[in-house]
Length: 138
Image (cartoon, rainbow, N blue to C red; front, side, top):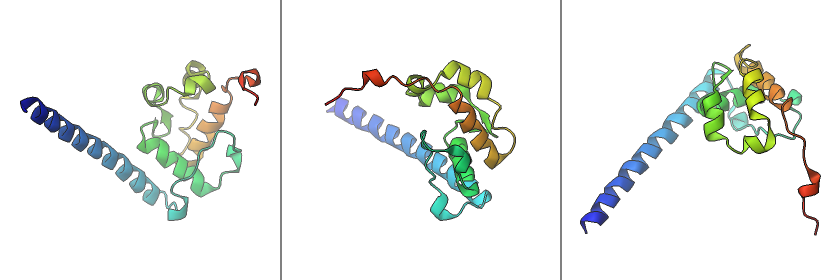
């Protein structure tokens, strides 16, 4: 019974910590989007790798910037390499991460919203070639 109670206490502490992290992240996101005057319908702009990032409307550029900042991927538009490697291990399957971090770290520092676009365009320069032969045919 004591083990169960200790386990339950650790679960509650872990849940509280996770809630605080999520709350802090979403608060940063919403504060940024209010500061950048992003309309509510554009708050959750998709950052799809196959889309043409140069055609993003200004509100979506700002939404992407705010998402990057809130999730710790950038600080003032400058890429956080530790966050990229910690939060996005799947990137290694798509991008040459070492070169991407080395050459794109300051690409987004020009200004808030336009910087997010420049950072994403820089990322595309380091996309690995796709291997279509590994796709199974039915």
